[in-house]
Length: 172
Image 1: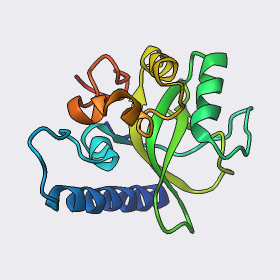
Image 2: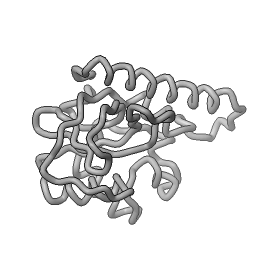
Image 3: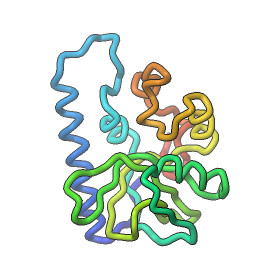
Image 4: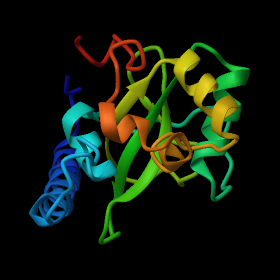
């Protein structure tokens, strides 16, 4: 599901997708053991399950902490109406998409709690709150994609289940 984006956002999202495809192509070109993960990279997971998200709008809460994963998680606990997303983001003037997390408000608008409001593209996976909370509790780490190694790469091996993805943004 793609949300409407401003033309500059669409260009940034296109750059993110191109980056994800290039990184995934490198991973796919390497010889693999049949027992390895279905998704050899986080970029491949995001390509498979991700979607683009619309423009970022200011929210009453913002911090310039460096850890978007912890910041979004803590805000999610404080405001359950928000939806946690994880994937890649790219700001105008930045050359490489970065793994990042953000929140989605009730109307589908992006709330980025750690980047200053700029023209930004977002491509990622909206996740169910219970899944996010259970994952953080199980691993003791924030960031679903980055901490998957602590669960023997379960998500990389099996993908994101229907119950882990938020139905408002991801069809079964």
